[in-house]
Length: 335
Image (cartoon, rainbow, N blue to C red; front, top):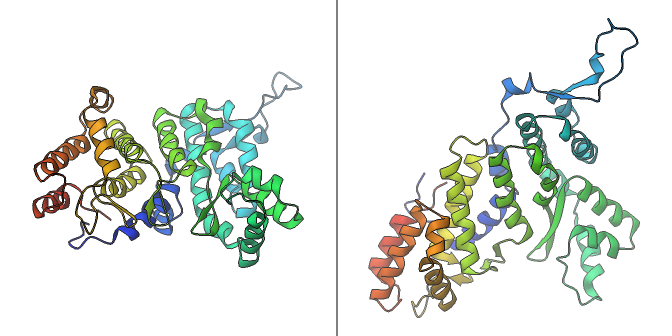
């Protein structure tokens, strides 16, 4: 639905980070499931076994169905085993079956995200904070570096299990929390369909370098715009992708941020009403670059942003009621 009274930018900031990273309960429940009819027929072939006689049939255990893989994902504690298994066996399947397996894994990682987050208790938070207190290093290292840094056996085990389950650790407003590590899916690049490769690339950009932290934009406006354009192109290119609805939802939040910014990094200053100088420069540079139009053909976002910047130029880049009305028209937040 379209909001008649848009929610606050801080809420959008939080939602964009969590939705893009797959950390929201709303998104987890809404994440598309794999096709059940396909699941029942797709098979993961085990290595061929030599028969002792010419009439011997292939043992039932030599073929593993996707349903079997799902049985490996019946609890959060089984994720390391399932991740390891998939990496070893995905090369044996077709791209369509490989896609099904990878999306089944992602669904499970989203499903069990709360369970993993619950393991990062107050005592674990204190251990992590104390680990960095005397180092002069901010606690936003990769989980593999965190594993090397800690000397606490219990913490090392938790971090290792987190990593082996396919999660990364980020620090959000001083709180350490797991998120899906989309770089892990690089191992499956050659075994999934093109749309899922592109989907993973989009998700990995945000998991590697979140756009919004602490209610502020922490990447450049140009990078924000390019990421949003990539989502738009995905929507145009893959109208039947299993992950279309996920990208559409993330795209809505991202577009809103392109036109409004965040609480601590608004596009237009709340007092002076002038546009953020970095945003002005970076947006205009991209809009005036012929490569941008070539890279993102048929982009509604580029057209809408052109309209905003043209209107802003008429008011010396100060926010006016006309600009406000235009923003509300082209960037409504849809939930």
